[in-house]
Amino acid sequence: MENLDIPIFSKTYELYKIFYGYRSTVSRQDRYTIWQRGETTILDILEGILLASQLSKIEKLPILQNVSLKINFLRIFVRLTKDIKAIDNKKYLRLQEMIDEIGRMLGGWIRSTKER
Image (cartoon, rainbow, N blue to C red; front, side):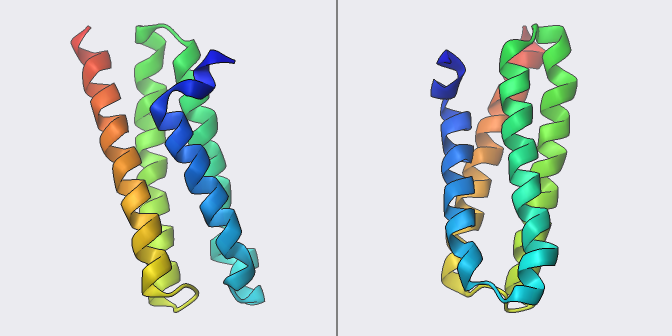
């Protein structure tokens, strides 16, 4: 699939792998609540990016806007995991940096879709 080469998909795929790798460091009680929700949200983001890459520009915009909303949810979930001390600051900063980069890439994609 050529769509797997789009940079935002690759970056989100990498984010999931890192997020998944941190799972074992999260306490059991947090792993099956907030952490699971974060993982599911990243998978939803991946799915939305892949779907949008297959659609026409008119169909693409609502999907991209939904992905943007999910990225904002993910930001909250990750911040919450730090605030409840489920992850340390170093892990938080790494995840947040990746989420911010994906958000910027998505913002550019949304702008270019609106301009067409």
